[in-house]
Length: 143
Picture 1 (cartoon, rainbow, N blue to C red):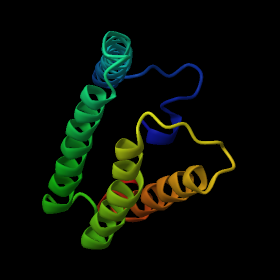
Picture 2 (tube, rainbow, N blue to C red):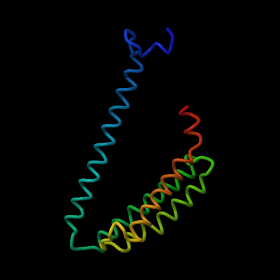
Picture 3 (cartoon, rainbow, N blue to C red):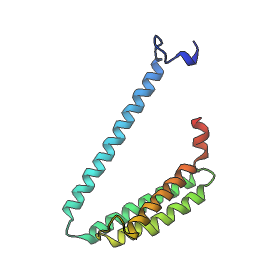
Picture 4 (cartoon, helix red, strand yellow):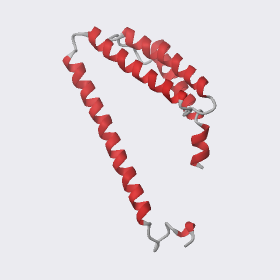
């Protein structure tokens, strides 16, 4: 059978393809459930420690350290592509100048038009662009 005719009306999807799609769907549901659980438990933690900013700050520092280690691990494994160390440098700047600054200022509130908010948004965009442009191997395999 011709591969281009596989998804046209009257042609069925192979059992292997159906099983693969079902597995991806299950994985997606599990990831979404995991994220929903993380949001719920983080909200419960904040409610429990609402009057202890130092304790919340400690948890935020731990989360930031884990995220930084994960980004370093991605770079070491070569998952950030040819620009791996540049991507890591962008992530380091974003984590130190952006997120660490936010953690140390916690629980201060900032207006959306403030320099702090604009800086956070710009650093998020820079980090997203660095990760989107970095993994050349993923782009090659996706085509």
